[in-house]
Length: 378
Image 1: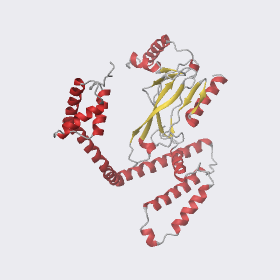
Image 2: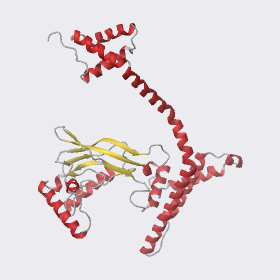
Image 3: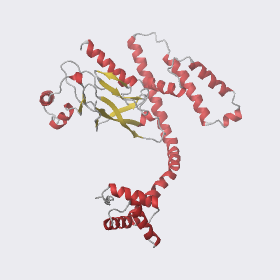
Image 4: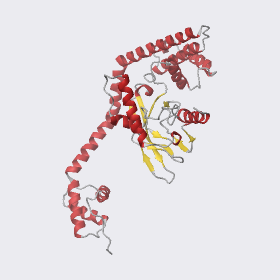
């Protein structure tokens, strides 16, 4: 890989991991979104120059885009890549069934070919996973960013395959490695500090300890959940700082082993703490969540019942009246149609108010169910 390719990859990594916007090789990237803070939500880099003699292919968790720096896209190369992979897999695992040609064709065929001056932007973001707030969102959510390719003349091509973003401190992604660093990241976010080495750490621990010391025995018996959480968070910060700044004067292999054991110990504590919360507190929390959500849910059910009743009662009548009246007098305005319906309402027919009828007529005209008003000149 030459210097140009190295600098191009560095620019792509900076965009994907830090800034989420910039221009590389004439291609404009804007992957910024309010639900995808780079500090909290991470993506696999896109557009990275492949190793020499290798060919770009589809990666899990993102669409396959063919960038200008990959060189020209040649259809025959796809078929050649399929043949070579099948041949390689049969030689390596002769008794295993080879992947289908269609699946391999999808692997090597891009979803879009990007040209210089194209712009890659996020069209929408879908949050996938639990949204109750009972667990840290990094552990229970993925965020799917559906991107669009905007051409220089303004045409837009939307892709079906999203870029998958995962939480930067998620305990269940990236293997069970660096658990301690992930916990530190959450501690820093909670205490609103940049890093575990921030000078504010000592002040935070001192302040919380002082508040805790001033609590009387009577107050301590009635201690609020919030105060207990603050004290635990400050204690966690204190111990994490001690571990992170410990001087491990050992050979590298021993230090690596110690760090591995720290990660394992953190994982044991985290998993068991979550298990206890799930067994003891989560049923109560879920009951409270359901109770809180009951009123809006009741409103949704009531609204659905009203819609069903409308489909069975006044809507067929309103549609029939509008069609018959418009057929007799094609130049009659929508307001005049509403007037005809008002006369039927006075005679006892179940019809809603003028605003509802006006919206209904507009929707039916757009749907082609009611012919639009004809001009008197035609």
